[in-house]
Length: 492
Image (cartoon, rainbow, N blue to C red; front, side, top):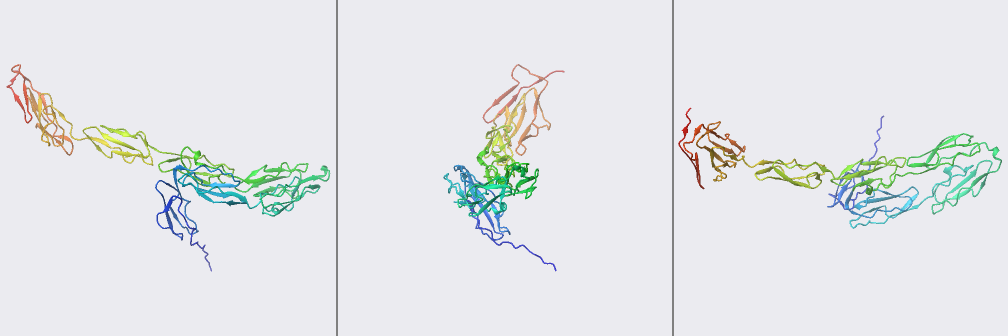
């Protein structure tokens, strides 16, 4: 018979509260599958997820969300309490600082404070008080803990007993006690030879340090030239030599090392070249934990968005920075001009386009440089408002009928207004030349081209009959006339 076992799911998540200067868009429950939509008050940027879901394991999806306003800053916090660490601390309005004490310490005060819009913190910096003693003083040379390091608990009121190796006498108290103030009542005793040194044939046994381990020939029976190797657990650093050798004088080559807490240096947003948001385990960093970075809207992150605190107490890469993206340079359109922040474009600012007289803008007249470094639309162009004006050819005049009922430029110029109809007349000594045989053309409103192709005047092989003018042009406000004299052809 096969039996199936299912991991029961939790039915509720801890109650979720909106961050300072943030709110839930709709009521937010804490039952399995409930989701919460988070937004920030006007003027605040959201950092972190805006949507979180209560998962079957009883936790909320994503990381804590905060609402910040970089334009308002609170004083930088000065951490003076021993063992106090700060997580995800930003000194912008809305930034939250979370406090935690090292192992063996109790937090006295608020575990979280936030930066208010008046530039002050919502509370004071808490303190850490010991709930236990640190590791007991190391065993003396030629001596050891009576029953190993584990026989010396660091609980208030506990005792730690020392002993000397055979051939050595104990000087001082063999016992010390963990006092209520978190300190041991005294130092370790010393061991002095009680027999001639020539009779010493071995070194005292070694024991694992707190938060560490040993390997090799460490005891209880140790011979000359035996070695003992020390190592520490993750998140701890070895202070001292990792390899000890038993010497002929019955002493180890160096004192036993200790395992101490290892931290990465605090990551402060002010260390970067511009405003940047830091969340996660950043101040200080803990080995194996991440510090996450984000930029305000409209800025571009330069560098890695995450830093990993390594086991040696260093970050795996440099702190990134933020810069506002620029849009590519814009050029004035043909037969047009531009003004504003155009070359290069600056995020949030605009470039305005204009056309010269006689031309119209096709496309948007205002382009804005957006957060992705691109302009809001393609640059516009300038197109002519009508057909190009026709200039009268040598030997002719224009007669024009425009939609407006007048003839601007006649008889020397034919206006390029859409719908204008122009007729070319050639004077004495010239003949009309046209591909379609006609003298009239029109500015087509649909294509803004003269159709059919305008005619021209070509000089004839005529000679004037007198020295008088060949062509007499008379212009009035309502009519233009052309009078021809009788020509005489050149005899061939």
